[in-house]
Structure formats: C-alpha cells, structure tokens
Length: 547
Image (tube, rainbow, N blue to C red; front, side, top):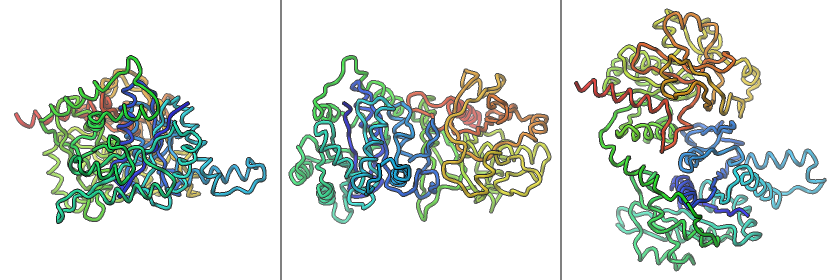
C-alpha cells in the first residue's frame, strides 16, 4: 500500500511549495524509498502549454510529451527521475476526462455530479501515477493556496483519501510568516488562519513548514503548535537560503524524514543512500566562488517593474549545474532583445560576457534583436548556445550574413516569405489552419544521431541520443545544401535524416544550436553534456580575455 503526502500552501503563492515538495521527496528517497511527485493545478487549462510564461512561468515538457507546470522540473531535478503525464493534472484535464466518460456511457447512465465524480476522478489519477511510477511514497502538491475556490475539489479528493486510508495519508502545509518592516516582528497570525481555512475543508495538517526570511524561534513555533493543534516537533523552520539544493539538508536538521516515516509507521530501509550526495553537491557549490558572466538574450523577462526569471527556470538551473561542475559561480544577466533593435550600439555590451544563450520562445517580438545579437557573438567568437528558437534564429543569421540569403527568415515571422529557411513542419499545417494549438506541437523525447566530427558528439560521447522537443517549425531541408556549402555543420539529425536537430559553426570556439530543449534533462549532480561543454568554452573565453 502506497503512502500519500499532500502539500498545500498558505498565506500567499510563490512561497516555495514546489521546491519543498521536491525536497521532501529527496529526503525520503535518501531513506531508501521509491518516491515520485504529482502536481495538481487549479486552472481550467487542460495543460500548461497555452499559458504565457510571464504569467505562469516556464512550460516544462516531459519525456512522454506532456506540457506541465515548471514544478515538474523541480521534481525531476531533485528526485533524479522522470516525471510523466500521469503525474500532472489540472482542473480542466479532470473535467474533460469526466465529461468524455459521461459521453461514452462509462457512468452507466447515472447523473454525473461535481461531487463525488470529480474527486473520484482525481483519486483515480493519483493511483494511476503510483502504478506508473511504482512509488512507495507519492507526494502531491496542490497549486495555489488554501481558501482558493479552485482548490476545493482537490482538497475534497485528499479528504476522501484520508477518510478511507487514515494511516496512509499525511498533510503538510507550507505557510509564510511575514516580518513587516514597520513592525519588526515575525507574525504567526496569517499561518494560524491558513490552518483554520484548511480545517474548514475537513483537513488537519500533520506538519507545518514555516517559510520566512529568518529561522523560526521557539516562541513562535510553540504559538503555531498550540493554536494550530500541531505537535511542537512537527512545526518545521524553513528560512530563506541562497541555494535551493540546500533545502533537503536543512529539513534533515529537524529530522523531517524520520518524523514523516514515523507518521506512516515506517523506518529507514537498510542500505539507504542517505544525503551524502547532497552534502557533496553543496560543498562543490559553495567552493565555486569565481564568477562567470553569462548573458541570456530573450523577451519573457519583464512583468511591470519586475523580472520574471521563472520563464526560463530550467535554463537557469542547467547553467548553474554546469558551472558548479566546472567550479565556477554563474553570474547571469538578462538582456532584452528589443533593446538591440532600437540601438545597435548596445551590442558592444555582449563582449563582457563569457558566453551568450538565446533560449526558446514564440512569436515575432524582439526577433530581429536576437538575430543581431547572434551575428555579433558569431563574428566576435563569443561562445553561443541556441535553444530551439535560438537554433532557428542562428540558422537564419547564418543564411543571411554568410550564405548571402539576405531575405532569409522563418515562416513564423512571415508565412508568405520567399526565403523561408525555417518553415512549418508539414504535420503542423492543419493545426495552425484550424487554430488547434493545445498539445499539438512536436512534443516529448525523440532520438537524434550525432555527427562524429561535431562538438556535440564530443560533449555527449555517444552517437545516439534522446532529447525533448517543443516546436512547430524546423530547418527547411531545401536550404541544407547552401548552408552546408558555406560551412554550417548539421551536427545532429533525426534517424531518418528528415529533421535537423543540431547546427554548429565549426571554426568557432562554441557555436551550437539545438532544435530540442537540453535544459529539461539537466540534473544538479551531473549537468547536461551540452551545457557542460558550453560553460567550459565560456570559461576558456573568459580566461583568454584576461590575458
């Protein structure tokens, strides 16, 4: 019988439920258990694929092609395992499934109601995920915060599971304790109200993870325990820290894993791996003091007066993983591509970066600025790494400025253009025509065969690889000849040679573009081969600039 841990949020969103869920999974895995995680999102959207990154954060793609919330990426990175489509659900996905079953008479002609049929569908999906992942402990994060109307059905499903299997279900509330600057005191009242709100859904939390700027003191811990009917030892301090990968170690300072196992009547398994790998990782991170400046040229940055780095969270983490492996500290700057369209003189600032990345994206805004930046780093021998759209735009730049195809562009910018070096994939034409956008891109893991003369092959060390995709457009095969004749290396292709997966400029320290998203497969303990190679080249560029 699997054990289930529901993680819910209190007081405000963005409190860190995702990394808390992932970290709880990591410490339980360190005790020898098979652990996986589920994200329940309250949105009516069927998946995260149609949501703007500046509103919702990054869309994370799984191996089996699901477009999920960015927290799925946290789960994969912390648990060092794949998360699948069964591990992700939204309100829209659940309702869609129930309605389809009703249309197919799978309810035997009964009156189908919100309760109990929606909660039952949620429970069925949780159990399917347990079966798929063969988990002994499944951790389930409910998006948003307690008290939000959208979460009621997920909470009701959790309550029903607890009612049926009292000893197999636990609840953890991740709540925020503010320290108002004019008051100068940590306040527990918002968390007390969050506990009571959860109580109103018929749920009593077993543990409280107290997020705040500083560690929780004993006075406030006791106040929360007393007013929330929580054992004193189950009120866990979770202060802000510099590195999220230290969270599992911090949790274990209060023996959280043992407390959870005791709740379930379990013990640590023999030959459990422990947290040695996490401790080694943190030593490596803290020893990486020499900064390495990396510029990311994109457009999904600014929301009002704030920069939303969550739009590219997997890219950021992949950079960090590779930097730490090489013993340097990442110093990342956000560079808005639209600035380069308005003022080409600003391109000179790219010289101060050891390496430059153009990540994925959609649409036409800021595209010419990205192309100008790509040209600058190619001509000035600055290491470049293009991801998905960054690969396509690098191909366009090469076609324009090396091959002489001055009107080269992408069908995404101009569907009537004469020189579409990047064109829509044939199977996507009907989808665009019919405005069928949801879950219709080329999604998930696909095989790729590497050219043995490429930097990519040297990075991977193998000829056959598998990487995750999310795109509708591809390099137009009609232009392969002219691109190759002018020196572009098609470094990776699909096994049937119909799709170019990687392009490289051979006479450049590092100029690589991938049609896929390597950032989705980067893990903190080993990094991703291409990011590792990019950072190594960037370090060499930085050292050369210092001579």
